[in-house]
Image (cartoon, rainbow, N blue to C red; front, side, top):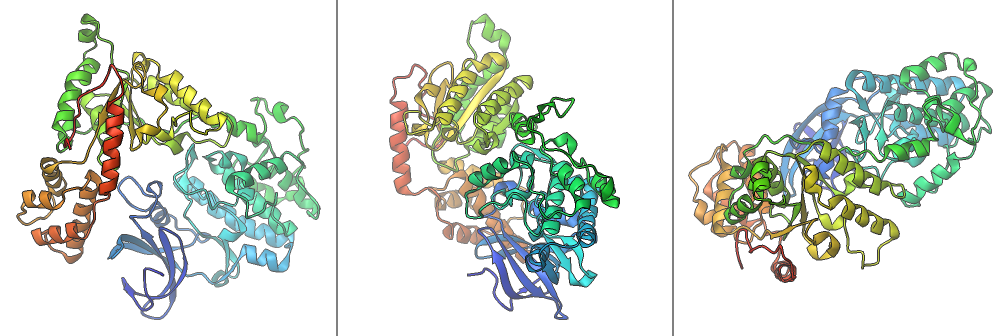
Length: 596
């Protein structure tokens, strides 16, 4: 069932019907007051993956489309926000294109004449060149299905579907890769490196599909993504099938789809120049050993991408906040860490005089949504250290041992930026218990972590690991000299909830509020629940142009259930008893919001 209904009004546009939908986005055909058709794309903010949002909570796709104005790119018209029962939504309206997709044309007509294929490729390249040179953005999803031959412009090609647009990136891209057609992606892109050259590679792959009537390196669409990637890479080790390729295009296609990056076109401008006179392009001979193909010693594209896969794209933040002053409640925890950890990290001379060994790291564990990662960032600010937040996806790799290389590089980067707080979010995903049924590569990754964690404090690194399931962490990690301290972070108590509400409502237009009553009504809420309640109430008030009232806050609280249920709390109590019941020399008293 779609969110918007037929006839519903959105900023002067009337909804006609739903075109397509996924878990966080729906696309509709809408009409303006004159009855002219437009596209409306609706983004459900509570469902959208975090990486598809900017730091200030805007939808990346909308922000990119606002900037891109080119005849060969689908045109942005307007955007805005709206409130629906599902929560806050952002929407974008774009020009409604009529015509057909390039994929449909190829399926219907088969191979296209070189002259027609060249015209289409040129239009796409002009759009790509504009994106690269004017805005520093990559499309990252150039395929026949994302090229519209518009009837409004007599078949002039337009790039559509801007959901994968990003700046050049190496590592984990800020968009969903699960829907990419792997046969149109360069191997470097499949390994997480998206740049100008990977876009140009895709254009050449599209050109191949146009002049042959078939896609390059065909792969079964039903295969899981990882298997599809392996199949495409296997085919690319063999010479490209040039059957049916017009003679004048052999040179461009063999060069543009070469397995050696240095031999390929480096920019849209290079490929446009080649299309001016294709006959001047000499065919590139297939290489059985491309290691000798470059003076820089490049291996084939697959190996070169694997080498680059050891790099990690994790931001090093300089603490600019107020440290523990930004945290409501948790006074016992802040006092304990100040006395047992922070003063040693801050004062090396004092630590040396008393022959104190700096702590190596600590584990913050407990129910989800209690602010463990937020606390870690504020801890870094309190100590004056740099801060690096790492998620399991940041260290992912499609290569055997690729993740191990990334782990080593991550610690090298942290040491280079020392003193550094290195925070691992959901640590159980990084170091699962090796006694469980794990593959050898997982065991290798755990071993790499054990090696890197050993006395890393001596390299200026303090590790903070967070976890909702510490019982799933390999026990070898939780010993002294690796993760020295364990701290349970429970639900906020009455005082903490009251202070959180005050903190989140500060500087918002509010009537006089009974914070004590609101804290009572929100019993059982975790920190993220309270943040969500305040934001929902503020959004409703803003939409109505009114202040946030006591009645609005109470109504909002009553309509939002705590995200952590009673049974889950009992389970966390058992986990805490198990963790703190271990015979550990570094056991700490229970601290946090409540002791229940």
